Each structure stands twice: as structure tokens, then as C-alpha cells.
View 1: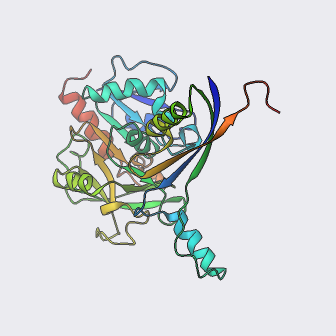
View 2: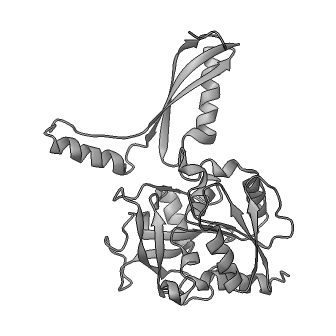
View 3: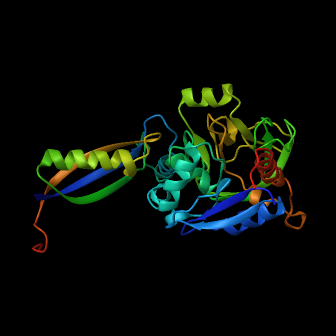
Length: 235
Length: 92
């Protein structure tokens, strides 16, 4: 075992068990934290899973950020603790100010539930070290609000500092209109904060962990994280 | 303290893509309303709150918009004080 990873469950989370399983497969030690509770003492990393926290009321992620668990997660992230924010977790992290920008309605106005190709843009991070730069991955997306938007200055910062980790691409690995169905600015699928310890990703690596389910391309993220934790001396 | 009724409008910031507004715009054109030149879709939030004055009610609502009701990255908000509400428990 290497690293205690805490999966936060909100009312409406539906990928918390997938994340728990993904952590186990990657060799980490998972546990759950209910949104009403405090309790990140001893945690080495936190996962904000996908779902529809608080029914997506007001805006996706807007209410979840005020929960007890999120108070702890925000403090944990500010101390430099690794936080993996997937799908609704990404929306929550943006609302909480842990990541820049926001995720608005898909340009198609439809809920997207299909496999999507991604390109690894930067593999020199604790989240992506198991991948090759330029590697093409395939993993499921499942979101209605996945259209990443930020002001020009923020986008330039993300691009210039290598903080765009994953981009939506077509099957050939090219950035095209068809390869970016939700309309995200610069086809952005995943980013990190300035310090590199918080990653937000719209597609679901947690649903791409088993060959029987169609793809194992998500394993690299969990394996990169667990390897990082053992390198920095987590239990 | 008085009770005030407020209406808060939250709208997608001008210039930002509003997929819902765009779809409704197309639908209105399809219905023959060629005069429609733009549609933006937002939310109206009806709020009732206690405050010492209308200005105080407005200031409180503005704080709520900044903290929760609107997303500063993509949305603008407008606050309208609709009037004083009847005191608690005595509403018709």
C-alpha cells in the first residue's frame, strides 16, 4: 500500500465507488469522507468524484463547495495536498476557486455520454508521469456542463505554463471541431492549478480502469498519483 | 427591521456563448419571428429578506450574488428591490 486517498461523497455523487475501486487497482489505500464530516487528518490525497452533487442546483458544483468536507479539502489543497477533481469534482473545484475558469453548458445543449479521445499535453506532472507526451487516450465522458471557459489571460497562462494536461482530440489525435464536442476553449479537457497539486479533468479515468469495460487508459492517472505519493514518502 | 422583496437576475455575460439562448433564438426564427436579433437565457431569483433599509437589503443581496448566486467568471447580475413585504406571520 502506498498513500491514503480519501474519496469525498456528496449527496448525488455517483462515481465515488468507481474512484475507490480505481485507487485500489492502482495500489493505493482508499477511504470515504461524507460531505457533512470533517476528517482529512492523515490523508495523502483527495479525490472529488463525478456525479450530480446537490442535484446540480443553481450551478453544477456551486452548493457542494460550502460543505464541511470541502472546507477541509480547500485547506488541504492550500497546504499543497494533491486533489484529483473529476467531472462534477472539476466543477466543484472551479466553484471553490481551487482551479481557474468554469464549466458551462455543452455547446450541443445535450448531455454527452460516450467515449472520447484525449491527448496528453504534458507528462511532467505528478498526475501524468505514467503517460507519454502526445499519447492518445480513450475514456468515457458523462456531462452536460463540460464546456471549459475562462478569460483570455487565464487561458494564455494555462497554455504558457504547460498547465493544460489533456485536450479533446479526434481519433487521429488532432484538435478539430468534431474532436471537441462540448466546445471547450482551446479543446481543454484537463488542467492543473499553478502549484500543480490540484488537477481537474472532465472525462472519467475512473471508468477506464478495466479492459472488460472497454479501456484501461485511465489507469495512468491513478498510477502516476500513487507513485508520486510513495516517492514523497506517504505511508 | 423591515422585510424586502427582491428580484435578482443572473444572466450570462455579454459576449460569452450562451448555448440555450442560441437554441431559442433559432427556434423563434423557425416560428417566423424574423425580428428577433438576440436571446440570452438566465435566472430570476425571488428573495425575501430582513434589513434596516432598502440600501442595506440591496447591499446584502449584492454580497450573496458575489459569494454564491452568480458565477463571477461567466455571469452578470442585477438586483431590483420590488418593495417592502408584509411583516412575518401577517401576510395575507
